[in-house]
Image (tube, rainbow, N blue to C red):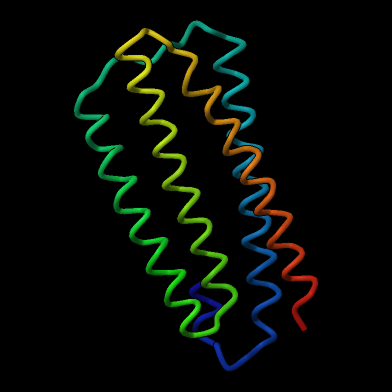
Length: 142
């Protein structure tokens, strides 16, 4: 994104930047899917309970949502497709932290160690969808 923003007057930077974002989304979705399957299949590695971890995750969600909003707003104001797409990546980071927070709370409250890897599959779906969307935007960009 920074590479593209340095040359906002150069439209030839938009397509490669969107493709990089698309690949990043795809790799993130693959990584989350593999890690979730490993945890669910292994079942031996159960997370512990952590109040400081839950507080940290709650703060992360709030900060990442604010950052995503700021990037999206700036992207709209600058009419910058790459920055708007990057805002969606930041929103996914917030969703990831929120899902981990839900998993931590469910584990602490009810001993549901599997809640986090199951919830992560929501991100796999969303990340795959965003990878496809960013690639389509790159294809339609002159």
